[in-house]
Length: 80
Image (cartoon, rainbow, N blue to C red; front, top):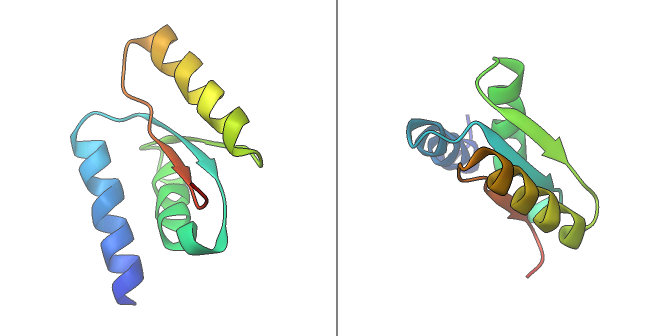
């Protein structure tokens, strides 16, 4: 297991520990370890992962999910 994967897994585990149940991802090469850790959490039934190609679309989706559920919905993007 690489250090990047270990760190990414810890980030996702902490999000789950804080009660995050949904995460929105706009994938990119620099966010790959966290994206893979999030996908593993989804495969284990611990997280609902939403993938969008456009960062703006991802942001608006996360905002809508958060407003609808009253819960924090993180957005993972590579670009700023």
